[in-house]
Amino acid sequence: MPTFAYVAVAPDGKKLTGQSEAETPNVLRQRLAEQGYNVQTVKPAKKAAAAKPKSSSANGGFLDRFARVSLTDLSLFCRQFSTMIDAGVSLVRCLDVLSDQAGSPKLRRVIADLRTEVEAGNTLSKAMSKYPKIFSNLFIGLIRAGEVGGVLEESLQRLSSFMEKDVQLRSKVKSALTYPILVSIVALGIVLFLTIYIVPQFKKMFVDLGLKNFPAMTQALMDFSGFLINKGYIALLIVVVFVVAIKMFGRTKFGRRALDRFKLKAPVFGKLMHKVALARFSRTLSTLLSSGVPILSAMETCAGTVANEIISDAILDARARVREGDTISEPLKKSKMFPPMVVQMIAIGQESGSLDAMLSKIADFYDQEVDAAITSLTAAIEPILIVFLGVTVGFIVISMFLPLVELINGLSSNNDDGGGGE
Image 1 (cartoon, helix red, strand yellow):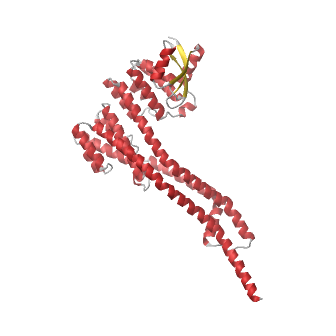
Image 2 (tube, one colour):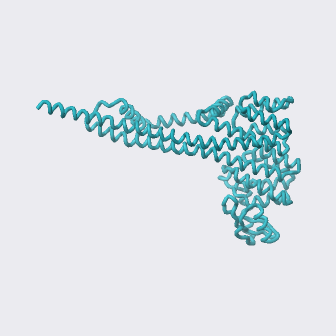
Image 3 (cartoon, rainbow, N blue to C red):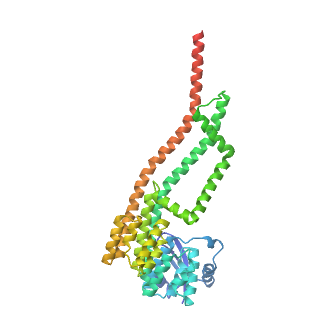
């Protein structure tokens, strides 16, 4: 079968080049179009050119080991994989085509290795388990369920939809954190500039004018400026030690639980983080149950995806109770990590036999709640940061001008005394 080189534009706007075997150029064009690509050119490939991508895909580079595969790339991989499986293309053939046209170099290499493993007689889920940093337990569990039930294309579709919504959820949280972080960095930069460069110039001017005693505000600011200039490395060292200590503390079981509990109870972001965790729990469990994964396995997998030890422990406790014959809703209610509305909807879903559908509705509800929380959070943080920046800069300005005011008042008093004497 001849090999053709193609140039196409992916749904996310990325321009891709690759090679693939096909009966004719039109067959390849149609295949790529069905996968969502906008095909620009299809030409017969040279033999030397055909060998090059295979070699680079299989071996990878040194830096490729440290590269990450994004959720967007995985989602597109699942969507294309599902379309080809549904069209009756063989599993090995699907992996061969996908290894040529994957956007990420590392993903191309991994897919090529999956193809080799499947050709050797291994299952797709077993081959994927070699790459736990790329394919999560949720991913492998759904693929295994699809293989056992003979509905691999449905599992891939659910995976793609799940990851697309997870990407949206992550981007919403990032957008909520981006603005306050940027404003905080700008505020810190302004304060450091004023303290390190402007304050010393004012201090030199005051000394040249003969001022020796300064107001308390001015003296405190000058002392702080002198500390940053002469011993700033100590402040930097304190910050580094604090960050490293927090990270090391977070690696312990007690520390991880303490930090996760703090995240849920934090005054500004706590409610947002809680809603994100509930949305992820509901979406993950719904996806697993609708794919035919047993409830005990689904809950165990789900506990590892919520990214919070406190909520994870509540899910595992509920799993233990379910294994003993209890319902899910009762232990979740006792954990106090799940709102009454969530508990009631889960109970109704269990009683009606539609738990996966009810969990999907809960996930949709909390997606909307996250949107509303981000909007209100952004609206609340903006004036707080502006006021903080204004107060900080105002303190520095006032501290610098107080000695000038006292100096002017002193000169006026001297002039008045001199005029009275005459």
